[in-house]
Image (cartoon, rainbow, N blue to C red):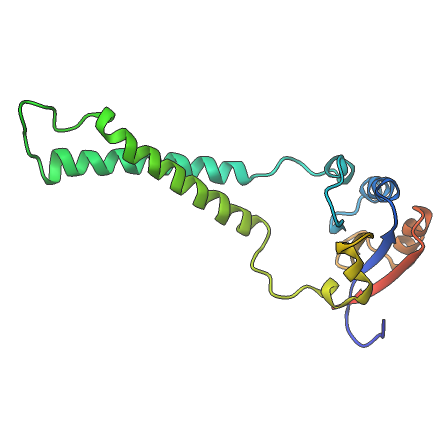
Length: 179
């Protein structure tokens, strides 16, 4: 690519998942923090090779679901016992049994919203622009190629050393992508 913009990342292309998996382990072991692997399909074991931990999205789901359940119970309690108390035939003004369907539905609704918004927050979405989308060879990431991109903003990044590391992994095409 032309050297007109600020460098964003050094990108290496791999033909097989095995090569990419080995390269990801080498990049992880070298201590890089700002890097990613782009594949056209899920590669079993890649999370471990990259050193990724479990997702935190489940906590957003849990908090959303708990909030929904609590709001459902409080809503029915407020409506039935406080706001519009209407005694009918000696029945209690509030019972968790009667409030359960509303609380259940709000648990599902707010849990789903927690999942969606938590995923968007953790993935920094919506992201309307990404430098890799300008890289012509990156179109193959949806077909048959696997790419590892090490960002130039990584504290361990050195053009010569990072290139040497990626060359030692078996990548045949390594290029700097500009922002």
